Length: 174
Image (cartoon, rainbow, N blue to C red; front, side, top):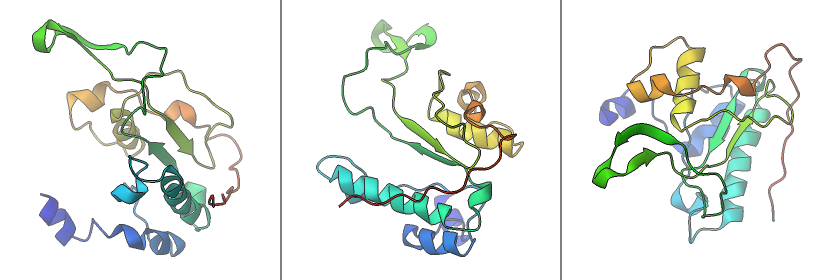
Protein backbone atom coordinates (compact mmCIF):
# COMPACT_ATOMS: atom_id res chain seq x y z
CA UNK A 1 0.00 0.00 0.00
CA UNK A 2 2.71 2.50 1.01
CA UNK A 3 4.83 1.47 -1.97
CA UNK A 4 1.89 2.27 -4.28
CA UNK A 5 1.37 5.66 -2.63
CA UNK A 6 5.02 6.57 -3.18
CA UNK A 7 4.92 5.36 -6.79
CA UNK A 8 1.79 7.42 -7.45
CA UNK A 9 3.56 10.61 -6.43
CA UNK A 10 1.26 11.18 -3.45
CA UNK A 11 4.16 10.86 -1.02
CA UNK A 12 6.86 13.42 -1.69
CA UNK A 13 10.12 14.27 0.10
CA UNK A 14 9.67 16.58 3.07
CA UNK A 15 12.53 18.77 1.86
CA UNK A 16 10.34 19.98 -1.04
CA UNK A 17 7.45 21.20 1.13
CA UNK A 18 8.53 24.85 1.51
CA UNK A 19 9.20 25.17 -2.22
CA UNK A 20 5.94 23.40 -3.09
CA UNK A 21 4.04 25.71 -0.73
CA UNK A 22 5.68 28.80 -2.25
CA UNK A 23 4.58 27.62 -5.69
CA UNK A 24 1.07 26.74 -4.49
CA UNK A 25 1.68 23.05 -5.25
CA UNK A 26 0.34 21.60 -2.03
CA UNK A 27 -2.49 19.07 -2.02
CA UNK A 28 -5.73 19.57 -0.12
CA UNK A 29 -4.23 17.65 2.81
CA UNK A 30 -0.55 17.39 3.73
CA UNK A 31 0.78 15.42 6.66
CA UNK A 32 4.26 16.48 7.80
CA UNK A 33 6.38 14.47 10.21
CA UNK A 34 9.83 15.81 11.11
CA UNK A 35 13.03 13.82 11.12
CA UNK A 36 14.09 12.65 14.59
CA UNK A 37 16.60 15.51 14.90
CA UNK A 38 13.74 18.01 14.39
CA UNK A 39 11.11 16.18 16.45
CA UNK A 40 11.74 17.65 19.93
CA UNK A 41 12.27 14.11 21.23
CA UNK A 42 15.25 13.57 23.55
CA UNK A 43 18.11 13.95 22.98
CA UNK A 44 17.26 16.33 20.12
CA UNK A 45 17.12 20.09 20.60
CA UNK A 46 13.66 21.46 21.39
CA UNK A 47 14.71 24.77 19.80
CA UNK A 48 15.68 22.99 16.57
CA UNK A 49 12.28 21.26 16.55
CA UNK A 50 10.45 24.52 17.16
CA UNK A 51 12.39 26.18 14.36
CA UNK A 52 11.52 23.32 12.00
CA UNK A 53 7.83 23.77 12.79
CA UNK A 54 8.05 27.55 12.40
CA UNK A 55 9.70 27.03 9.01
CA UNK A 56 6.84 24.84 7.78
CA UNK A 57 4.16 27.21 9.12
CA UNK A 58 5.92 30.24 7.63
CA UNK A 59 6.15 28.49 4.25
CA UNK A 60 2.37 28.21 4.17
CA UNK A 61 1.77 31.70 5.55
CA UNK A 62 3.98 33.19 2.82
CA UNK A 63 2.26 31.21 0.07
CA UNK A 64 -0.73 32.08 -2.06
CA UNK A 65 -2.63 29.15 -0.51
CA UNK A 66 -2.59 30.72 2.98
CA UNK A 67 -6.15 32.12 2.69
CA UNK A 68 -7.44 28.53 2.41
CA UNK A 69 -5.16 26.88 4.98
CA UNK A 70 -5.77 25.20 8.28
CA UNK A 71 -2.68 24.00 10.11
CA UNK A 72 -3.08 21.55 12.98
CA UNK A 73 0.01 20.87 15.07
CA UNK A 74 -0.13 17.94 17.47
CA UNK A 75 2.47 16.13 19.49
CA UNK A 76 2.52 12.39 19.95
CA UNK A 77 3.31 12.49 23.66
CA UNK A 78 2.49 14.56 26.68
CA UNK A 79 6.06 15.38 27.79
CA UNK A 80 5.77 14.47 31.45
CA UNK A 81 3.47 13.72 34.34
CA UNK A 82 2.37 17.28 35.11
CA UNK A 83 -1.30 17.05 34.13
CA UNK A 84 -3.77 17.51 36.99
CA UNK A 85 -6.71 16.16 34.96
CA UNK A 86 -7.40 12.44 35.10
CA UNK A 87 -7.68 10.98 31.58
CA UNK A 88 -11.28 10.09 30.67
CA UNK A 89 -12.44 6.53 30.14
CA UNK A 90 -12.50 5.45 26.50
CA UNK A 91 -14.29 2.13 26.85
CA UNK A 92 -16.17 0.92 29.88
CA UNK A 93 -15.33 -2.74 29.37
CA UNK A 94 -12.29 -4.03 31.17
CA UNK A 95 -9.13 -4.06 29.11
CA UNK A 96 -5.95 -5.98 29.74
CA UNK A 97 -5.64 -7.39 33.26
CA UNK A 98 -9.05 -5.98 34.19
CA UNK A 99 -7.98 -2.36 33.77
CA UNK A 100 -10.37 0.26 32.41
CA UNK A 101 -9.16 1.62 29.06
CA UNK A 102 -8.46 5.37 29.24
CA UNK A 103 -7.08 8.10 27.07
CA UNK A 104 -3.51 9.07 27.89
CA UNK A 105 -2.43 12.36 29.36
CA UNK A 106 -3.52 15.45 27.45
CA UNK A 107 -1.25 16.72 24.70
CA UNK A 108 -1.05 20.17 23.13
CA UNK A 109 -2.79 20.93 19.85
CA UNK A 110 -2.42 24.19 17.94
CA UNK A 111 -4.85 25.29 15.25
CA UNK A 112 -3.47 27.99 12.93
CA UNK A 113 -5.59 29.43 10.15
CA UNK A 114 -6.96 32.69 8.79
CA UNK A 115 -10.24 31.39 10.25
CA UNK A 116 -9.00 30.10 13.60
CA UNK A 117 -10.86 31.66 16.52
CA UNK A 118 -8.58 34.26 18.07
CA UNK A 119 -7.45 33.34 21.59
CA UNK A 120 -9.75 30.32 21.65
CA UNK A 121 -9.21 27.46 24.06
CA UNK A 122 -11.44 24.51 23.29
CA UNK A 123 -12.74 22.36 26.12
CA UNK A 124 -13.93 19.61 23.79
CA UNK A 125 -12.47 16.13 24.26
CA UNK A 126 -10.21 15.36 21.31
CA UNK A 127 -7.88 12.57 20.33
CA UNK A 128 -5.44 12.19 17.47
CA UNK A 129 -8.40 10.77 15.56
CA UNK A 130 -9.98 14.24 15.73
CA UNK A 131 -7.59 15.45 13.03
CA UNK A 132 -8.78 12.68 10.71
CA UNK A 133 -12.41 13.29 11.68
CA UNK A 134 -12.04 16.97 10.79
CA UNK A 135 -10.68 16.06 7.35
CA UNK A 136 -13.54 13.62 6.83
CA UNK A 137 -16.11 16.28 7.72
CA UNK A 138 -14.55 19.01 5.58
CA UNK A 139 -14.29 16.77 2.53
CA UNK A 140 -17.51 14.83 3.14
CA UNK A 141 -15.67 11.51 3.35
CA UNK A 142 -17.02 8.52 5.26
CA UNK A 143 -15.11 7.57 8.44
CA UNK A 144 -12.44 4.91 8.03
CA UNK A 145 -13.17 3.20 11.35
CA UNK A 146 -15.40 3.25 14.41
CA UNK A 147 -12.72 5.16 16.32
CA UNK A 148 -12.55 8.15 13.97
CA UNK A 149 -16.34 8.06 13.51
CA UNK A 150 -16.68 8.52 17.28
CA UNK A 151 -14.03 11.27 17.52
CA UNK A 152 -14.97 14.92 17.90
CA UNK A 153 -13.85 17.12 15.01
CA UNK A 154 -11.89 20.35 15.48
CA UNK A 155 -14.43 22.58 13.73
CA UNK A 156 -15.30 24.46 16.93
CA UNK A 157 -11.79 25.98 16.68
CA UNK A 158 -12.79 27.89 13.53
CA UNK A 159 -15.08 30.80 12.70
CA UNK A 160 -15.69 30.77 8.96
CA UNK A 161 -17.88 33.89 9.21
CA UNK A 162 -15.04 36.11 10.44
CA UNK A 163 -12.85 38.16 8.12
CA UNK A 164 -9.75 36.08 7.37
CA UNK A 165 -6.74 37.17 9.35
CA UNK A 166 -3.48 37.97 7.56
CA UNK A 167 -0.45 35.74 8.10
CA UNK A 168 1.72 36.28 11.15
CA UNK A 169 5.14 35.15 9.98
CA UNK A 170 7.22 34.01 12.94
CA UNK A 171 10.93 34.41 13.63
CA UNK A 172 13.02 31.33 14.32
CA UNK A 173 14.80 31.27 17.68
CA UNK A 174 18.58 31.57 17.76
